[in-house]
Length: 436
Image (cartoon, rainbow, N blue to C red):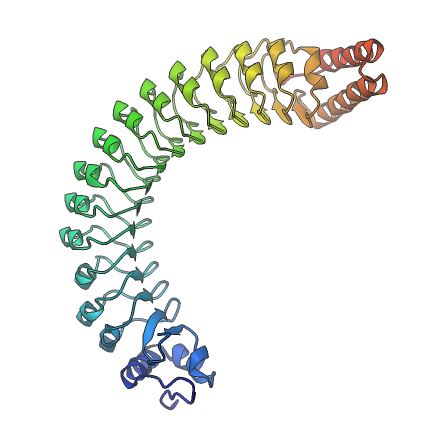
């Protein structure tokens, strides 16, 4: 049987109480003892961070993936100095009551275990600032969680939570709350008390209604609501004016409140895979938006105000019911990628030839009679334009596009070169074969 842990280092004399705790951990998970015995200098022991004052006491303990079935009671003896404790990816079902002595503990990470409930002792750790119990089969959170008034980050994602207790509203210091990948169907109105909340992940739940109280969380900059069952959004979301990223895709949305146009700091807005027949003209106020996804909806038209999104670099509009797009799209001069494929387009406005930064343009699977302006083939940054129905036809089109651009360059952009390029571009468009 392996001998007891010893501290042979002259530079650091391990505190006797700390050494006793490590010995108990080595007995609970033999692999830990093997790791520590293999290193002669206690300062280099894996998974242990010592206090910098030379006291030989432990400040951080990394016990993730240690093969622990139970945590020894003696870990509570590290209370005076232990500030961070990692317990992830073990097989823990409970935590000893002695952990209540860890009154300096600021970070507790226990993801990927088999906790069916949050251990009661956790709610006694009043100094906690970060608590992670993700990837556990938790079914509920106890009301006593309200005692963790210093908590700034709570992660209980990828569990089996069906509800959140109203006491969550007592955690007014929360800046990040991860609740995604659970079974939530609603949220408590008390969420409105979380005035410092910056990041809220709610995706991959079963939410059918979003309460108007969400509008009180005005510090939010990141909100994920994708992969739920939402049909409508509360107008109060227009109060979230600091929002930078908003994910609403893969829901059942049939309408957008015009108040979303108030989120003028948005840089990324995802609305794809819903049931939207239209979008409000107020979205034209999102002038900081760089990425906008609207594919796989039921859009039949776009408001001309979309041309005000002058920071837009990527615009997804494929798989809708568009028969035309507004000429104002030509004002999106920062646009690099534009997806218009799998619609019902019969024409494309000549103004798209003003998109001088456009690198990729997708137009396949539209009306067989689709008419395209020849100048599209002359866009200087264009590298891909998908119109044809087979790879061979697409390759031929790209070769013709290259010839059109070469003809223009060869004549220095003069009248002769322009005429030649326009002729090649016209051939390119005329011989393209869209998907039927």
